[in-house]
Every structure is written in C-alpha cells, then in structure tokens.
Amino acid sequence: MSEAYGPAVPDPPPAPERRYTLLLVPEDGHGAVVEHRFSVRQARIAATAAGGFIALLVLAAVVQVATLSRVLGHDEVVAENLALKAELESTNSKLADLEPLVERVRAYDEQLRGMAARGALPGFGPLDEESMAARDQWIRGVVGDGAAGSRTLTSEELFAELQQIDFDALDQNLQTLEQASEAMPQLWPVEGVITSGFGWRHDPFARTHWKFHGGLDIGAEYGSPILATGAGVVTFSGWDSGHGQMVEVDHGGGIATRYCHASQLLVRQGDEVLAGETVALVGSTGMSTGPHLHYELFIDGEKVDPYPYLPAGGP
Image (cartoon, rainbow, N blue to C red; front, side, top):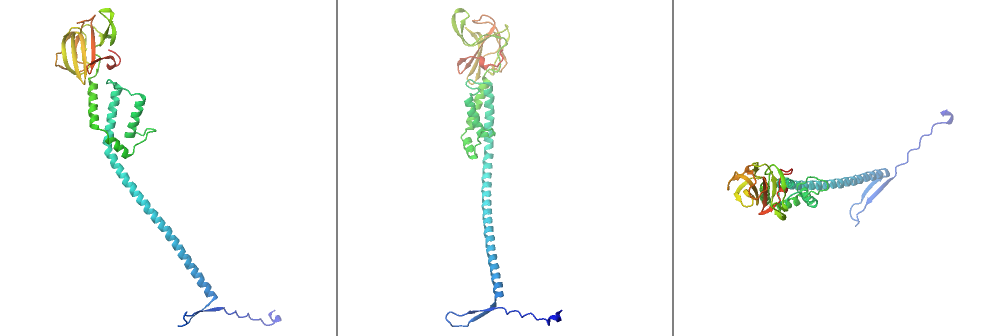
C-alpha cells in the first residue's frame, strides 16, 4: 500500500526555541555590559520557582503569627492560673484561721438554743418570728450551712465579722446565763395539789378583803418532805410571824426561794444544799388554814410567779 502512494515524507524538523537576551548596562555607561540569555521555558520555570518561594514565605509567616498568638495566650492562662492558685491558698489559710472561731460560734449558738428551749431565764426564751429569722440569717452567713436562699459571706467579710466578736465576753456572758439557769427551779418542792396561785385573792382570814398572794400554795400531807428546788446556801432557817417555820435558800445569780409553814426544819443557816435535798417537812405553822407548802421565788429581790419557772406537768 505504501508503495502505491510513493515514498514516505519525513516529519518537518521542530521549530527552534525562541530565546531572549537580557542586557544589564551600567547607568553611567562605564563598565562591562552583562548579558543573560534565556528561553521562554526557562523564564516560566524561574517564575514558577519564585512564586512557590513567595508562597512558602507567606505560609511561614502565617504559621509564625498563629504560633506566637497561641504562645502568648498560653502565657496569659498560666499567669491567671498562678494568680488563682495564690488567691485560693490565701483563702484556705484564712478559712483555717477562722475554723476555731466558727466552732465557737456554733457551740455558743447551740447552748443558747438549749437555754431558750427550756425557757430557763426571765426575759429569755423562744424568739419571735422576726428575731428568729434575723438570727438564723446571721448564723447561716457565719457558719455557711448551705441553707436555701442564704448568702455565704466571702472570706474577707467572714473574717471581719468574726473579728468583731468578743468571744471572751460571750463566754463570760454564757457562764453567767448558765449559772442563772442552774439557779432557777429544777424540780417541784413537794408532791401535792396547787391550792392557790400567785396574785390577788380573797384573804382566807377575812373573806371580804382582797390580799396579794406572793407565792404558790401546794396542799400536801402533814410531814411530807419539802425539797430544795435548786442548789444553794441556806440564808434563813427559823420562825417568821406570818410564814411560820420557814427556810430561805440563796441560789446565786439573784435567785432565791422560800419554803414556808413547815412543821419541822432540817437545815440551818449557812448550810449548803443540793437540788432535791430535803430542807423541811410540810406543816401548818404561822398564818395557815391547813397543811401545805407556801413556796416563793425571788429574782433580783422581787417576788415573781414561780409557776412558769417550775417544770411542766405540775407537782
């Protein structure tokens, strides 16, 4: 087939590659002229290489900026953590110093709660709702019991609050209150039935007249034991024109008691007695209409109604 068409024609030779010459001539015309020859292919390769190099430079700059930002952010976090750690250590140190004070507040509060619940002292007892709410709010703030709606004081506020408390004075006051509480009647002086209360009544010897009755009458069998209602010192044991055979006991703290109309006295002036100790026997001496005990309670020299201060339930 190839012979039918004649001999094969060879491919034409490739066109010569176009080349360029770059001449660098000194500005003042002196010196050698530098000649650079290059082809289009070489120019493209050089341009590509230059573009890649520039891209690498840009990428390196971006990475450097990002890394620097992260390093700076890390340093800030480290510095902040160190500051928080120092503050926490300082707070823990203050709280450690405050712990004994808080425990004293708790103990003082518990003792006062117990005394208030017993109604042990005149002028002391369960608080009204407003006072109790204010007191509980203060206690919650100091001791931080986590009650709902309560605000826990900061360590600085707590430290300042507790520093203002004179614990020595509180301890002394508490001891005084406890002594006064112990001086109050701890038990009924005799077993029997209340026949006359404290206050105004008809005079049993002149029924048409009213007379103030300054104690509590408890009817009991003749010769029944009369008990001291609290520990103290006997300040009087003898005869009184109106009260007959009588014993008076000073319990301290401004508290004193009297046991009147006894048939027999079993203690003498100056004797120390304990709560529940028999000091006399029931009788009907003096101005009396029958065997009974006339019991009187004095607080700071004033006669008061003994009934609210005696144990609940009656004699």
